Length: 88
Image (cartoon, rainbow, N blue to C red; front, side, top):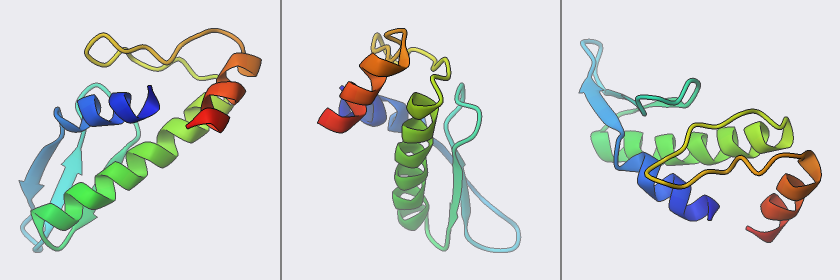
């Protein structure tokens, strides 16, 4: 389920070439995950890693997460989320 959430979120990622060189990427609707890279491909890899780490922290802290194309990771209660994170 977490993998599918990440895949669907990454479909919404946007990348911009920055004046200083390289690329900046983020996912509209998610507050927090962003990344940079020398190339767009590197930026995409970095953004995926940041997104995964951001999700782990959000689940650990029981933060409310936006639904992503019909997938919700909001099950209510830290105990359930700990099981979900351990299973992924």
